[in-house]
Image (spheres, rainbow over the protein chains, first blue to last red):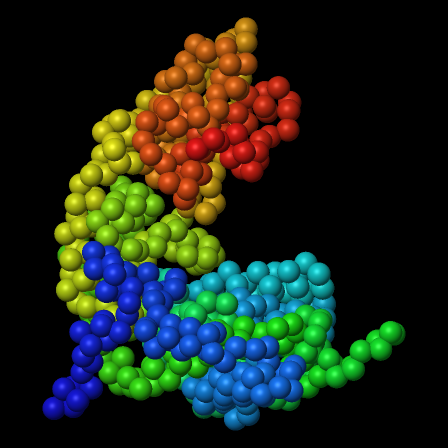
Length: 412
Length: 137
């Protein structure tokens, strides 16, 4: 049976996470905020730090040469993981936020002028919103919004309408909502935006840990993610951009590494990717990220997607059976992945997650850095349940009675 | 003792002073945008004394119970004394251990009171760093 072949040995996966070995009483359902790391990632970073560490692209001694080679191999792993054409299209940053800021502050600042528009969706995370609002303040560009329906689906006619205005130069859209777990149809959005002459930037912070991607197949122009969502470390992120775009973009930060030559009266920037990597890069983190991406690929996307679909089913079933609890957005688990958010009548999200935390359940409450989305949904805060490979259906089902107990404590 | 002690839950379930007063001397609103806690405070001040107080708002149990408890405390108090209530006083009024991430919920009522009184005296309002600086933990 096909399903059998794809099945994931969750117990074996769990054994690879030191976090779970130590903290057996914890049920970690906050992987959308940051994912726990498997042993191999921790070991790779540790071994590199102990035995192979040196700064990269600077020394000509063998240790530095080897560190540089390993660092550049990480870039190659990312290229292959994203299905990018060229290695120099992969820029290391410190996270999705910096990647998205790089797009706005380099490409946006150099190429947008007053009257040009950037289209955002109400699903976006603040890191895909604020850099463009800053540019609006600085340069007078226009921000236009694409709305969602009550289930969280992007209104496609809304996209068509904003593109018709003719001044949209870029559409920035999430690949997977960090609140609703919905995946906008980015491939179609990219095709439609390109027809209207607009570029597309994908915030893939959530997407990369849950589904396979190919930036060439998507034909996206920019694609950003963080290391600590796909089982890697914090402190490293990636911006993918098409080679010809990177050529036209001015450097982001100034400093060492990003130059070809510095004179007293000026400088000539290096070529990409170094042009956008001023200062000593996150070297150890790059080794960790490479190991994490290889770990994901070794497990295989079919097994990952099947396991997480079962987790989402369990989440919807569990939450759906609790009186007074309202799931935000998608009402069917089959459309959702990674996370689901909800509110409970009469119980503030902070109180509820505080009480759940006392029982060992780790869930996030708040606006999850998506205030425009919460405003659209008509709630000030929500509770988010998010999953990763190390979660089990039993863990999620245990949450049901715990939520019911917390509601009882808070009942007025 | 935990955060959701009976005292907190009791005020959360049965908030005191949550009905408007006639002709308030001053009205002031504070909120924590990060979590949606909001408190609007109304004070009637006669001859330097707080003769009536009421509030309205929404948010977590801690912030809402906190303002209910605080308003019981300041009834009849001199405005000048109420303005001096410190984070330490607020901690003892709540009587529950506070973790760092709940400090803004716990102190929002105090900030609403401080800033209502500062507004009344035409003084600049207090900021979070200023308020948290007074907190000795």
